[in-house]
Image 1 (cartoon, rainbow, N blue to C red):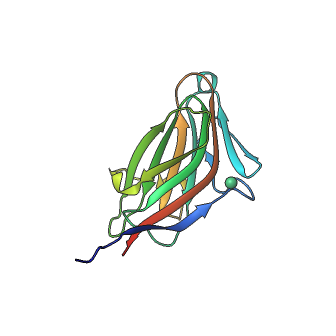
Image 2: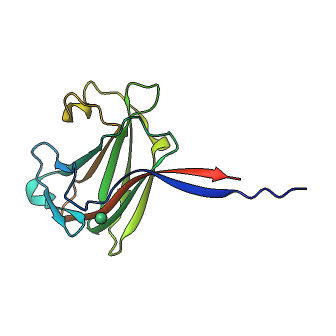
Image 3: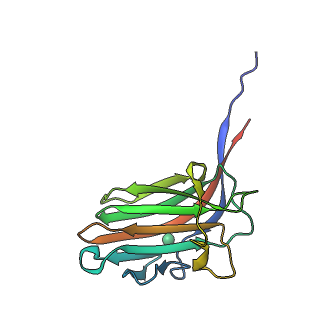
Length: 168
Ligand SMILES: [Ca+2]
């Protein structure tokens, strides 16, 4: 009998480390979020209680939809309140965006947050979120947001899209 050993190998398909600036991170509509480039991170600060819903958005311009089993990984710190992460991704052979969301609890430490793109469900909308990028349909949108009272403070050091493959 031959033993089969499986190794899981990760390949980074796309990565933003915020070395030169905040990349495509932007405030959503007229919601109030301060977006700062500090060191090699992007820092989001908002005060939803006074200023209303806080939402920053980010998009990934990539030539093809990512594989369905890809992982969106954020290295982030949520120092106050929780953060809601909403994502919209395109899939091979489908014209609508697929959407999913997860909530990240506050924690004083940096954490790696893994989002499985395969957990997304079809999102039927006439024009959102594509209306945010006229003439362009990015393969992935990410919204980092919060609507709860108290302060909102999120730091993001890295956003990556990773594919995990088994090798024999
Ligand atoms: Ca960084």
